[in-house]
Image (cartoon, rainbow, N blue to C red; front, side, top):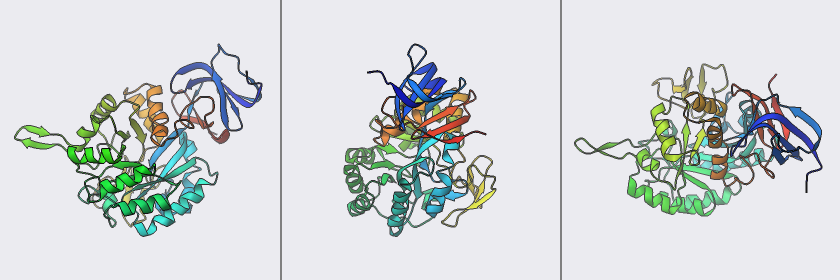
Amino acid sequence: MPIQQVDYCLQNATLITPDEVVEQGWVAVQSGTIMDHGGPDRSQPQADAIVDLEGNYLLPGLIETHLCGMVGGDFREGRSAYQAILPTLPRFATTSVVATVVSAPPKNFSKHLEVARHAMGERLGARLLGLHLEGPYLNPEYAGLSGLGVLFQPSAEVGELLTREGAGVLKIVTLSPELPGSVEMIRTLARAGIVVSASHTEADAELLELAVQAGLRHITHLFDATRPRAEKEPLVPAPGFDDLVLIEDRLTASVIADGVHVPLDLLRLALRCKGSDRLVLVTDAFAGTATNLEHVTYPDGVEVTVGPDAHRVADSGALAGSLLTLDQALRNLYKWEMADLATAVRMATVTPATLLGLQDQLGRIAPGYQADLAVLDRNLRPVMTFVGGQRVWQHE
């Protein structure tokens, strides 16, 4: 039966659904849900209000699965960071986020989970989908900045604690699969539906296979903080960890497309091997992002310089997080001619939604999906953002 009346229609847009591109498209929204969409060949329903998008792009809101901080806030700091970051994300076309906490000691797990649980129940801007714990179960040889705090050993018992206390909140756990107890912890978390991801690792093919069989599904920031290639014998290379990931179709991976964390040729290789259905765009951004700050101090006491290309440890110059936003990641892939717009959008919408098990709710312009939408101009700059059908940001 045709839809008789809706709250509003967004019209005169180029829709990137991203399963198709529809010129002169429209989207009908009712009670925060997408009711229908189409092009000039289909009649749009009657609406209480019409929003003319003037030929701009309309796409699903972007979904961030690895964000540590921005606008001066770090999710490790608690409630104040959520109150600063969540209202800011729609400026960058991001409508959903999994907040990332880096190497928090287990004694602080309950606090971080409770703060996130409370923020998930508020409407602060972007949707908070849950929490991502990156560490503290990491190989100290590859932990980098994430290992400057105290690291811990994984176990099935820790996994049971996290699944119990993190029910409904804990979405992703990043660990090193070669540590004693990791496989047991992976199995426990995976059974509870938590995405288990590997990084900061020197795992070989045998260990990676054991981890995948136990339930490992994802790789955090591909090409960063992992074992490189070595020589099997003189002039004969042995694969590095990332080589193994590229040929493993059971694993998805996230990538920081800022041109700093991953050389462009390796990014092209990842796209060629994994494709847009297995590669997730993330930022791994920290507190100095979207600020004019020149220096920040992380909650663990690390002094960091901001810019021009990344966060860097003040006394060593080592990378300490990106300055990337997801809309810039889209623009980068398009500018570098690595992906068409629909492919780039898929990597920040459909693919992360599928990773999180939300592929029937978020990440597409389709009937029944949440009306989380982003409008970009023809230069791919954000113009307007909707969360749950509500306009939460508009460029002035």
